[in-house]
Length: 391
Ligand code: ATP
Ligand code: MG
Image 1 (cartoon, rainbow, N blue to C red):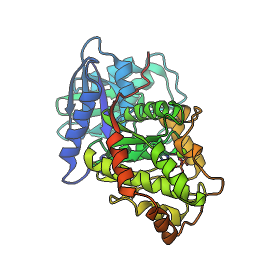
Image 2 (cartoon, rainbow, N blue to C red):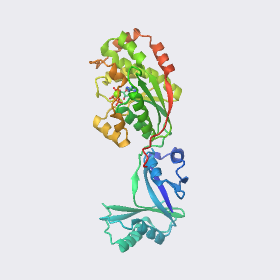
Image 3 (spheres, rainbow, N blue to C red):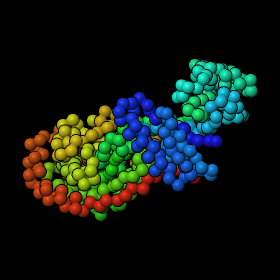
Image 4 (cartoon, rainbow, N blue to C red):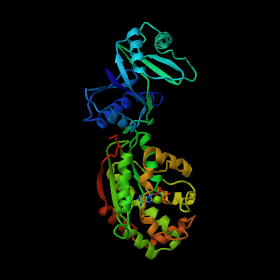
């Protein structure tokens, strides 16, 4: 019988939290695979077994697992009796038709009662595979690894193991609200938090009807795409044109970008309280653009009451772009749009806005009223995860 075997990162899950983490991962996988023919997801001595019903949509289930935070790797495995000859027969069957340059068998024994040691299992199964296929052994650099795992009362045998997302299961690390622009960075920042077990919700500021709906659609598409890594999330859409027009009319041009960001922080802060989020997340990167100097980051931060986390702060654009491609957000991010800040952006933003300057500029505005109005106009959407499932 074929199952899917899931390994989590054991080291990360050590300690007293472990049963709780594992339970969370089990529930997340059940939820992500609902309706796909999964009979059961069960913990099995340091790994999980996904028991499939006949006709289960295996490819789709595997695609879902590729998005599951907290999964170290996963494999389609044959579940058989814990009997050496049965295991060897299964290994032969699973490898029929393959022509690796070299191979090895890797066995683990979660059941220490099993009478044969792991090296002896490897030797026995290896010998049978050599007899059958005539393959060459390479312990150090095998082309193919045949894996055997013994658990109480049964054994698993498999060959192709896929790396998972890694990190921690969604929901074990609290909640965050991510400021999601239409750019490359902010979805990657949100994803990095998800990977550490955070449930991330989103807020997008748009200037519709001054601009088109392009940025709104992009934010939706990006939120959907990254939400495949955590299933459920919410997206707040905040009309921002009034705030921007007011800033443009009453403050020096050079300070505008920092002032916009400070208003975004204040508004996001309020929405975070309503969402139960404990931190704000941005895609800011030190020195990437004029507005992201240490001085500006700190003055932007000080407008928020919640901590502002910036998972990408010390990354290069190239590293971020590579990650965006890997998680599937890049193609959406490069679609053309009119970002709210581009429309109202001065040619020479201040690189080191002084606190005094900013405070006196804000004294000319009714900050509280602007924030309150924007929060009232914010609209909440439920995000539908975009799995990019195989068809
Ligand atoms: P990104 O690719 O994330 O847009 P960027 O380099 O273009 O990054 P900025 O436009 O300066 O950066 O914005 C810095 C951060 O501020 C973004 O990463 C995002 O978290 C937040 N932000 C900017 N514009 C918006 C917006 N319209 N709505 C929500 N958040 C925004
Ligand atoms: Mg941007």
